[in-house]
Length: 440
Ligand SMILES: NC(=O)c1ccc[n+]([C@@H]2O[C@H](COP(=O)([O-])OP(=O)(O)OC[C@H]3O[C@@H](n4cnc5c(N)ncnc54)[C@H](O)[C@@H]3O)[C@@H](O)[C@H]2O)c1
Image 1 (cartoon, rainbow, N blue to C red):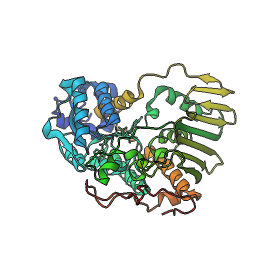
Image 2 (tube, helix red, strand yellow):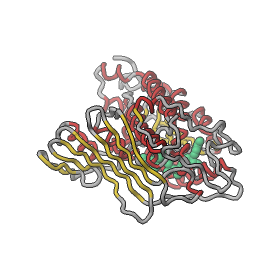
Image 3 (cartoon, protein in one colour):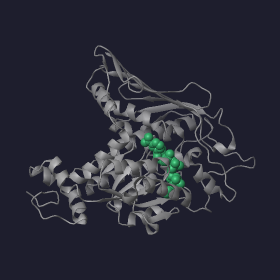
Image 4 (cartoon, rainbow, N blue to C red):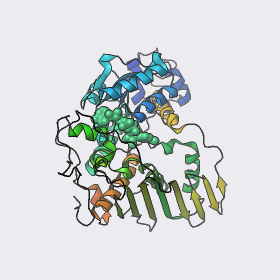
């Protein structure tokens, strides 16, 4: 049996030894007959030091989920572009669990380069919860530095970002590091159960799918007196395609992810769609659309009809519907299968947000890495190709989209830097026009 840190017969390792060996010795532990449960228990006393990058609503929530998931997790470092956001998150976390949030002034990093300083501090695990634009950069930096990652969705806003995430995913495999995705429905027990039934043929062959994420308006954080244009856009990142990917990417990716799951994460052959900006037209709402309708055509003839809308005062509906040769399945909201194999999920299980962190920390401790990188990249790309098809008004193949050279990055990341989109004289940001905007 290899003398890895998880072995109950080996001398008690230092925390650092444990982390080093736990990432590389998984195969040895299993092959040597040591059960995962036992190895996890043996290593369970070791503290895992967690750093949070992006201290907003979700990031702060993810830090709580991490502490809920494992009693020996400590939040030792925080990074946020904005100092006030960081402070608010730190205070909230300390109020909740003072003894487990040890980040002091030397381990709190603001600004655009804060993420690298956090990664370079003594952390074992990094939680990535900034706006999606930064995900490929932060994910790469974390994996390059040998850190385990919890990675919120979506994971990119353009094809170069997706290509970077796929390359980093492979690097994580090579290094036996964990990447657990914030596409949280994959960790929701009720969803896992109903999706497994669909994948096992409960509704026969899937012929069509319909995904909707139709909601009202979201937050807007306004413009501060001393905001540079970069600061304004960063504060209101949701409304700028270069930062959020548009709302079909930022929000609807959850729904696209479930359809992709049903398709075994195989990409569609061709995508076309239509969308626009009818209601949320004030310049403060940047350059994103407020409604999207996209058709995904798969090689085997399956069609995915995908709709999302953020318009106040309209009918709201967030559902997943799969239609098959032997029946149909609704995931959100009824969790039911109708047809030849009727079934309804009665117990949907505990918080999926806690479960994804339980999976991450258990995998680190057992030395059996999880890498969700590929599916989180494919699901995010479904959103990006949909946006490309709508913005240009063209039908776009998966291959074209994956090879797209459109890079939505600014030339530099600085508060006085120039964002990729700027308002015209009437304060309006240029908005994509189907039939005019070119595919790049
Ligand atoms: N899985 C889910 O159910 C779920 C739910 C909500 C949000 N999210 C995702 O989490 C991410 C964050 O969303 P949120 O609602 O917490 O937004 P938010 O605006 O509340 O938080 C984002 C934080 O990131 C900070 N930030 C921006 N750029 C940064 C950078 N370069 N370096 C460091 N910090 C930076 C912002 O200042 C802000 O504090 C998004 O990708 C969103 O899609 C996922």
